[in-house]
Image (cartoon, rainbow, N blue to C red; front, side, top):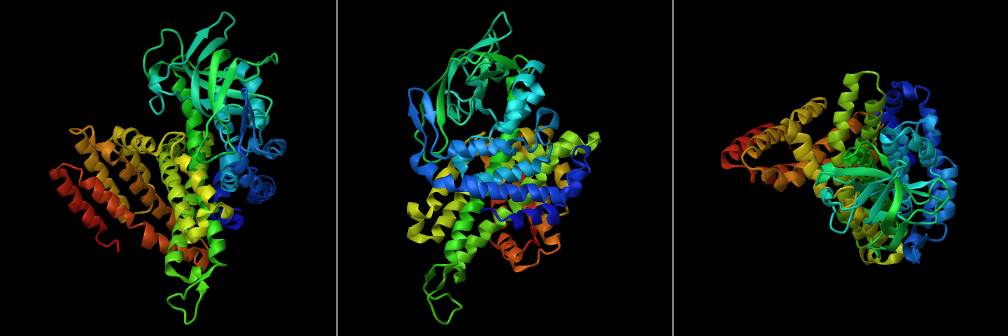
Length: 565
């Protein structure tokens, strides 16, 4: 299970999170003691109710019979206990039946859940995003009927975007919605890859569906959003049919469904042809949670590898006089473990800070503060989603290596984490899409001004300056080579992730108590094994620049990085 002491150290000592959220009127009464009590109870609940179902969910999986889906043994009882204990409502508004707590506490809860049982966590994973989408864009009637049930978690939700011919390119969506005289619509079409599209966890499922109204414009500007419940207000079953559940590499405990909407009754959410605007409220919330899934999964893999390495003896370690020694004494193993711990610790700082900024963006009384926080969230969320799901998979694979041949066997559980983690690089927008979104829409669109402002708020750093130099060069080069940013977007996102991690580790180093061996070893690993990747990423970008710009940028970058090592 996730180490609660590490989490509270980052929240309280590194980020001074309670002081940050208490500065917002909405959370003035939420002190550090209350937050610790919430997280302590969350940790106990996850350990006792959710973690024990990890393996059974993978081995038995979900079953499908004539459109009905049954979840693995124990999943339904655990979910009933989850929502009845109030966990889904942590950060929902009090007026909707929520607890009105800071978003970071909900984020930590879902990090714990993902690390304990990723398959089970998929069920409530979209709840808060659906709640936020409906709260911001739903009609008063829809909010009255559905918000309390979503806030409490009594009903679950889905996000129905993908079609067989339309994956990342949502402009190709063909599903239709026909208006009716009573104000409802009839939604028709087939959606694939729908997590939790059908199950027996809850009495109702609230589907949020992208479809087209008659005479809607082609492409993404013609998409509208519709709420289509599994069960209608009169208790009748809607015409939403689960055609099958997918056989997957991992996440066997989560039913991934093909759903057919046969003139299903639904209601419009938000303005006509503005469905993506409404849906992105849901997707952005989901992307932050997916980044935190990555941290939770990587931590789970690290904990298994660390525990094994502290018991397994093999050969004589280089500094030992007599073997066999614990494999934690071997440098190759220490490098793996300390490197992954460096990603986990730095990732928590970034993720928790971003969750805090979400609340600042929504609740701070000063408009300038809200804008600054929103800029951070817009730029950093795709970085968190992509970088930390990449690392969850590659880092979990590295942790499997600690076990040697035993890691490849099911009995140790590490191979399940590797399989389960892989999908997080794909869903909620592939990591390539995240990188393109970051570079083209968030950075180059304003000539790099937003990124420059964000980095200017961080302490001075040579790599920060080198990244800004490279950004300016990309702004210039993209004016004559429209394809260039697409070639280097992944490298750019990774470089920014490393700059942000460097800042995060600076925050850790400045905290009282951070100079113990617990924090010193991953801090050293970050400097030695992680951060040097930054220069490689910038070199890859520079070699794609036109010769004149590349030469100038390389000289500038070399000058600001001259004393890096």
